[in-house]
Structures are given as structure tokens and as C-alpha cells.
Figure 1 (cartoon, helix red, strand yellow):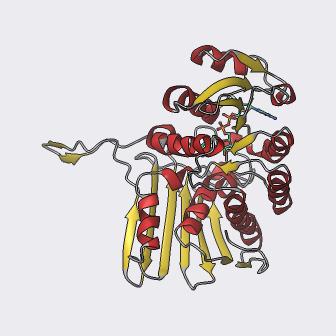
Figure 2: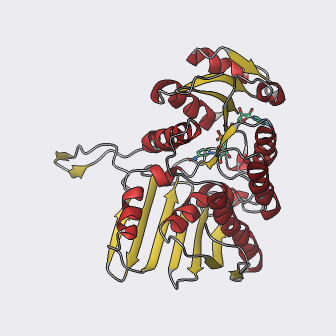
Figure 3: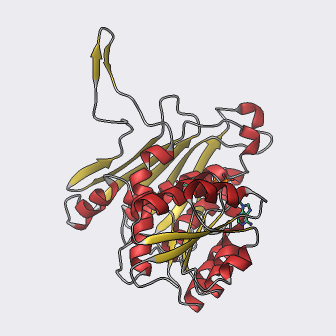
Length: 342
Ligand SMILES: NC(=O)c1ccc[n+]([C@@H]2O[C@H](COP(=O)([O-])OP(=O)(O)OC[C@H]3O[C@@H](n4cnc5c(N)ncnc54)[C@H](O)[C@@H]3O)[C@@H](O)[C@H]2O)c1
């Protein structure tokens, strides 16, 4: 069992983002201990554990959850497993940090909400942009009234990597990429509820895979009940780096955030001025990933730090779900008026 100053964490899923989160827990979160790693693929947990000096590994997630030494889990398995893993971890009484999305349907996201409520466990979703440089400051400017009433909002994600288009699950652009932007827009329009969603999407980067269901480019328009009009935009192959930006324009001013410069260095030469750019989320979002994990750990240890929970997970997902319908029908989709935006 952990003492009150150290949280014993079990990682579920030793893949790309799991490896990055594991590294951060070990190296950058002083009041957390990565006590175990679980992954059903034989050898996967051991390989990661070996690089980080983690003692316990499992191929059976249930066995790790049964260990009373584990206080909390960080879920970095593929998205389709998240809901069941959250339910399992909640039942075991663990504090839960879950990568996005927490579910792949409204029914699944309701199950997540019910599980964490019924078992009274801490739940955080990996909407890291809330911790990225400039984004909490934008929200603070809104809360301070410096933007006035939000009228136009925008959020975009341009990812540099589409190495294997055949490996991209259908609707990934809405459920795993733009979901960050949907949450960012909700975050930048506090108290407002999304009422209508219209999605236009295509396979422009890898058109040969369109028939297999690939969408690699999208623009989504969202109407909110305070009148604000928002756009979320994504593309999977930005030649110049990993680009995430946000903007809120209101009656009293405007705020923007997001910068893909790798450093403040500008090179001045015969051809002009050049700036190196960040090439991966694990590079540009490193401090945001650290921030969200630190907030989770501190909150689990009894010092609450604000962060997105089950309501935020649901509010972003309902927009993603509506995008699928809008793309299928070619029409705007009205969101259920009974659902509230947290
Ligand atoms: N917040 C972010 O910016 C961000 C960035 C990247 C990925 N993600 C999210 O993290 C999740 C994982 O993405 P990834 O790119 O690391 O995937 P990945 O495929 O690289 O890794 C997934 C790992 O989970 C393991 N796994 C498979 N089934 C499992 C199960 N039932 N239980 C536990 N582990 C299982 C796999 O063996 C693999 O090691 C996705 O939901 C993705 O959207 C979030």
C-alpha cells in the first residue's frame, strides 16, 4: 500500500502512449511510483518494465487489479477496450486515469459515468490540451471576462504521421483525434452546451483507403446554446510538424494558443528566417502529459487539482458520435437537449 505521499500506479497497455506515460510517471511525477505494468500481449509489459526498472508485470489485467498495493491505474489500451477496463478498475476501487476516448458510443460513456459514480473512485480523462501551454491561460482570460461572450471558437489538430493508413480504425479522426478539439471547444465555452454538429470529412491524404473507411481530413462546425459558433479541424499529414492550436473570439477580445516551434531559436540565413518545429505529440505535449498526470496523482492523494472527468469525457464524445451521423447523412445533427454540458 502507498503511504499518503506516494501513489502506486499500475499501467494498463504498454504501447506508444503507454510507454510515454510510464516514462513520465517514473521520471517526472515525484509522488507516484509505477508499481506494475499490464498488457495482454506476451512480453510487451516486460519490455517496457525492463527499460524503467518496474518490478511487476502482468498479462492478466484482472490479476493486477486484484493487487491491493495498486492504488490507481493509467489506462492506455486501445480505445475499444476503455469502457470495460474502467468498469473493472472502478469495481476494484482504483483511482482511474483513462486515455481518450472513455467509450465508443453514448451507451458506453454512460456506463463509464455510472461505474465511477457507483464505486466512488476518482476518474480523469486524458484531454491533455487543457494542460498544454496557453490553453489554461485562455480559459483564465475567459473566466476573468476579458473575452466577453464567446462568439467564434476554433481548435485544430494537424498530425504529421500517417505511416500506415490501413491501421487506422474507422472514425478515428472523430473519436481519437478531434475529440481533443471537441473538449477544447467545450473547455473554452464554459457553461454552454453543444446543440448542433455538422461534419465534413474525406480521405485527402490517402484517398486509396477511403473505400476502406479512412477519413484523414475533417472540419466540424458546432453550434452552442449561448449562440457561439465553433469549428474543429483535423488532418493526419501536416508536412511541417505536430500542429495544435486554439482560439476564442468574443465580444470583448480574442485569445489564441498553440505554437509548434520546437524552441524560441530563429535561424537567420541567406534564405530567410527558419524555425524548427515539433514532430510528435510526445515531444510537443510532454509538459501537458506531465501536467495531467500530476493533477491526477495529486487529486488521488487528497490534494484536488482541477481536471477533466466523466462529464467532460461524455460531452466531447457526444459530439464525436454526432459527427459519424452527420458524415453518413451529409446533414447537421441536433444534439439531445436533455444532455448537459459539464
Ligand atoms: N492523449 C493523447 O494525446 C493520446 C496520444 C496517443 C494515443 N492516445 C490514446 O491512447 C490509447 C492507446 O493508443 P496507442 O497509440 O498507445 O496504442 P498502441 O496500439 O500503441 O498501444 C496499445 C497497447 O495496449 C495493449 N492492449 C491491447 N489490448 C489490451 C487490453 N484489452 N488491455 C490492456 N492492454 C491492451 C496493446 O498490446 C498495446 O501494447 C488510444 O485510445 C489513443 O487514442 C492518446
